[in-house]
Image 1 (cartoon, rainbow, N blue to C red):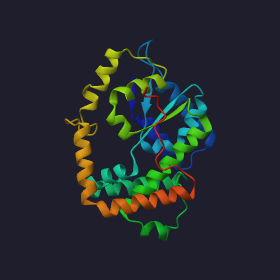
Image 2: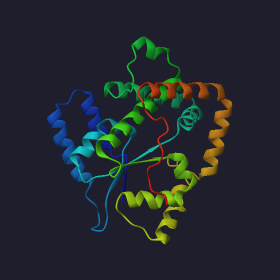
Image 3: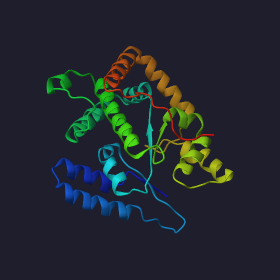
Image 4: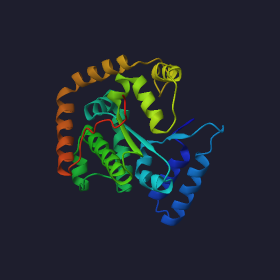
Length: 247
């Protein structure tokens, strides 16, 4: 069974940002994970899909639960920038709010002065936040190993949802028969927008991304190149390959 962005994990991040005692935070995180991991049925395992702000405490979560596994999903930088641009003012405001939180978490991939941050465009702010999350992903894989931490990019997911579904369940040590794979990979979850629950498809997403990229071509290309340059400064792969076994 899946848990979508459990609020308690967001609250723990907020508590941490307000200066929570480390030992008390670890104890409450341990208890929270214990409660979240309880299935409703004996044959179930629980997979929690946290909000992106929880990435900052992901190392602690995996450390506290040594038998747990993580699947990290990200969008290639051009697609991510396009998805922010298409959201207009609210998307651009969201990335700035998110970056403030990442700064409080000490999770930015690079050090910038306040003046330098204020000089960044909205999409540069989005790109820096994206890179900072990717840096956390890289450290998780290095610390806990690929057997526990797998990566999948959105392009792979949408190109082959059946193979990705099969591989994702396998990563979590849950085998599906082919009927179950098709019920999930070709089911309603891949045909609706997760935000507003409206009808949606991989082709609609590609079309939307391409239109937005065309309308913001110069800015997206320049910011994507800037992000890749920042990634190179810290020897970070800005497009890690999917490590799920899709064969």
